[in-house]
Image (tube, rainbow, N blue to C red; front, top):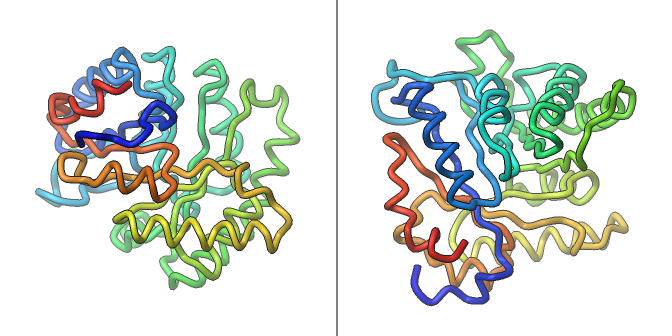
Length: 257
């Protein structure tokens, strides 16, 4: 991570993975992340561990987010990303508005089409296909926005919408049409290419590409090419952190925030 290019203009976030840990472990971690100066703190939206013991401990994302909103005071908060298929979009809008109030206007509403078949199957949701899940996401976005506009009281903050994913035919079009922020992953070449595709979609739908904040999820912070990601267009780097949530692994980043 040495020699980061123009890091002063890049935001940093941390995703705390809610598996193989206790709620108290998570509370300690997000308090520490807030104290250390991360711009954003996130968790993920799954119902079971994604690796390690598949029967290990795990906690639900939006419930955790409400606690995170109470325990922190500075960083913006969100889920990277909420699965559209798990919650009615009108209900999700109300949940997001409520947590935005609890956090004094710090919520980011992250959303995606979903991919984890076990989550869908065990909780009784229709998994369908990648195409059908994207179609449901496209249907949900206007409903969600309409509900946010009807809620009393409205959100306290800007409540930016983040869409996650890199699909070039549908997902990036939806980002251009609806999102304030976009999240992707991969190496610098992949990020650069996806950024260019998103820019083209913005032109096609009449959107200023600069109006969408480009966030990149970094699964392996120690070995990531941070310079390359920044040069590829990353404006906001979000680093994965698993239990036991040892921030020493992120010290090269922490020195820059």
